[in-house]
Length: 157
Image (cartoon, rainbow, N blue to C red):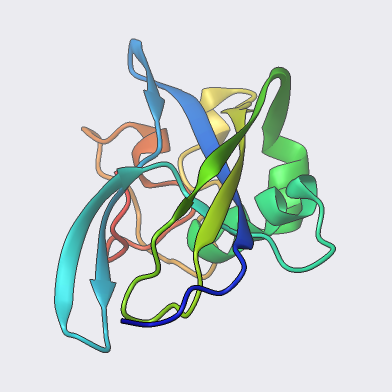
């Protein structure tokens, strides 16, 4: 058995991206994650999220998460996303997690959760919004918001 070291704190941000798609409100979720080291894929079914860097605010981590994981540029986020301030929720797990095979110490979790809403002005202009560097076009049956920001190979729903 490995000796227990003092608990470390892992701080995360999770971003619930909400959008009207057709007649319903949808939330963007990460479906699965592929681990290139082990060659395995596991279901995630969580909103996009990531660890905060030391000294980073949850707002900055939120922007970085949407840029890196969903491929939404910072200018696009500023124009088309509205942070729902009253949805902010912070939770802390006072129970430290047992160390896993790759961790040498227990880890306490702190999670910042926030909802953001996609604002699309004039839906006729939204057909390719956010699709940086992607020349794909939508067919007539597709809703404009079904393919915003990320390539079809990403594990996002």
